[in-house]
Amino acid sequence: LWICQRIAAMADASSSDAAPSSTPEASAVAKATAETLPKEDDVMSVHLARQRAKRKHRSKKLQYQFLFKSAAFLVMLAIVLITKQVQAWYKGYTEGQNATATEIPGGADDVPPFMKDKEGEL
Image (cartoon, rainbow, N blue to C red):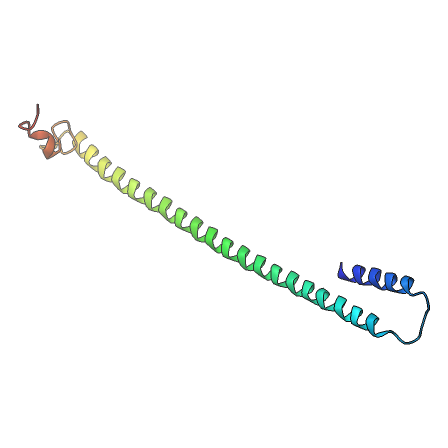
């Protein structure tokens, strides 16, 4: 892009010269150096903008990666805890279904202590 602009500026400068001379004038040299400084600044600013964009993208990528791994960990933790609770309940349920069991731990009589106390009811 800046090469095309530079070529266009050189073409304009050559067409605007009415009297071709072999030595460039001082104003033309100053004008040429003034044009190159902003071009270098433009190149530098574009490079710095790309660097900032890459850094921002990398930061977002790490952020989303951490979020995904945390969510995966929480889902697996929930699955493990639910599985343990189901296994504990199933163990009590199968013992309650046993015909030779004297005390039925998983049966209808196995209620939590807060439900056994009837004093606090209205």
